[in-house]
Image (tube, rainbow, N blue to C red):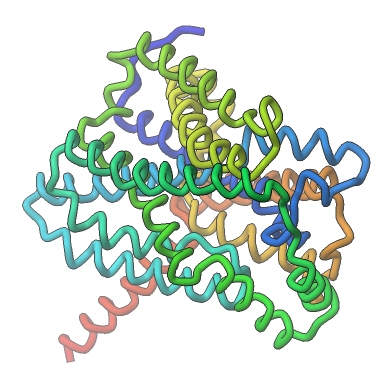
Length: 392
């Protein structure tokens, strides 16, 4: 495989590749919550179907907690790229950025309350507003401040967890919440599902829970913005050996931390280490690995369908929820609670395969994602109407 620095348009494809793989990883882990009361159970003991232990173990170590950090960093990377382009062209950035984040917030609200409670778009929009206030900082300040915002509260929580584990190491299942989910989603009315969806969202997004999400997601956005400011991906070809070392080192350390519950003790303190500290390291290792893959023209061609899915990431993310909830909720096939981990994983891969085909067909015809295409068509229609009115 011949490696060479990539051109600007190909470097963008490397970012799209990361987005595409992130969306696959996010779907694989979200699938557990699509078909089971994942938020309220101990997954190590709940799933007992054929190969469930092995499949969940693979997902837990290689996927869980490792793809939403990568996608979050890419979100920060993209926002910082827009900021720098606006500066170079001497164009206003803040009004456009605020408008886009408000639109994203609107999509998130609709997604969270009408489709699926596990929405991340609201969090991206809210943390995006915080990032707007920080984009003037230097890359070094963004990294240092992001590391402090992330490490200090999570290290404090980890200490509390080890104290709690020493008192009571048991992991409890929310029996009432599980029963409520199993009653509402597969057989309930839309009103029942809406009520349960709202309860599930509040379970994860109460004030303390939302503060937890912000101190988790915002630092990833800041790291992504810092990387964009030094054009880390654009200059990847200049530091090939460094990317190899980074990929190897981050993946080895990160995967060891991810395996801590299996290697040391399967309690919630080590699970916290697994997701909060191991997950982001594995995410950055995956990012380095994808950059190396994107340096190969042949591999870019082979993986172009994944990059195309990444180009229409919002459409892909929302359609995953729409398809999955149709499969598992009562207004569709009603299979909630009836699917094991292996079957759910095959369903996720099937959904992603359909999305690969759709992205290939759509982009070959329209050249941009459906939501972007619709937005531009609406803008064109309004401009045409204004033009016609002015002529009158």
